[in-house]
Length: 507
Image 1 (tube, one colour):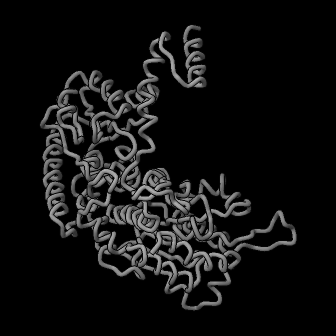
Image 2 (image 1 turned 30 degrees about the vertical axis):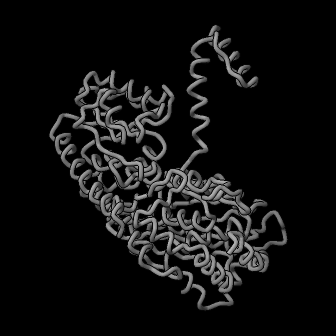
Image 3 (image 1 turned 135 degrees about the vertical axis):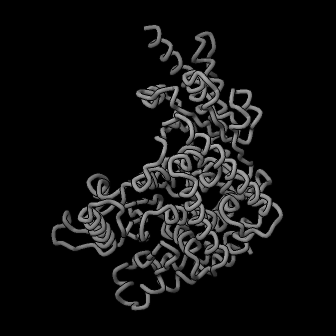
């Protein structure tokens, strides 16, 4: 079968659904709501407002079968080399669940258990010390996941330590974080798989000197030798492995700061929630598999409907960083234009992921979602039970969540075109019973598996990211040109900009 056959199969369904009305689809099919709803652990998912009828949904399941989605999921769990460009497995699931049957998966799970024991021992010593603050130094997956987890969970668990984050190579951020901290009561954790990330080493050097002692310096890395050379005590180095990509690494020792703030028990609960979703994805047939359904609808919206962007709209301030986290997970994983076997793709891949937390974003970009010329598919995410003492605010939040999703789907006609809501904007509703560590773990694992489903359909590798490497290499060379006016750049535009920078510096 040709790799493009799946797209040809979907094309007539997409043409038929191009003018379909979402509200009418739900009115005409009484069984639609039941078949479009799934409950997995603490997540209630409703797909009834996607522009898909029963025939299109069946074609999507045929696509999953023809593209070998279920077999690819098994290969992922079992530790087969699904990252073909780097010839290695992607075993982030083994960090939290023992569902793989292969030797590599079994060994990875044991390594993860041992690392968590090491994390617990280090945290026990930290808790017995005078340290009150921890600075997490990392970028990308070494930053986004821990930030999101702490934002989401610290309202319930304020924690033993205050955790601060440094990611960007911007001295203003360093100055802001260090302002008000006491170096004698602060620890720093450098998180970098290679221990060669420019931003992390620059900021780490500042913290190492500011602390004045290596006794409160920690590292999470696959390059222990380089961390020790940097000045980290070998006993303070937690391992990473080449089979864990940065954007899939929250479940590893990258979560050290999360465990420090919330305690190892809460960190284990986060992993347990992800493991619950892993079990569902591994063991559930495609028709009732939440991640497969979510991923297939993402493919449908991108290639069937031709939508170029996707909005993530959590109606809970604690999840405000979720769109940022998913930007990396989705766009770094799926931003590819070549197949795993090196051919140019004949379809579109990653949408642009964006969004923000409601109700704030209702007063910024929702105007474009409702009445703009582009249709933007959306994931609405709500949390039913509050953990604070303000029930009226929760009621207001949920009522706005439900109202906006309804109007975006159903619209409202007016003789005045300026006041008419066209509706027919597709969305998925994900309701969490409560924002617990288990629920957050399940939600993030759902998105990880959805991304893998999309990658499998498109035939691309979601575990490499060659696209960012060339610019990083070039930046290293340009550092010299910025430091020494006698050096220059080959590109004429870059050369002119460097000359301007030097002129401003000279005053």
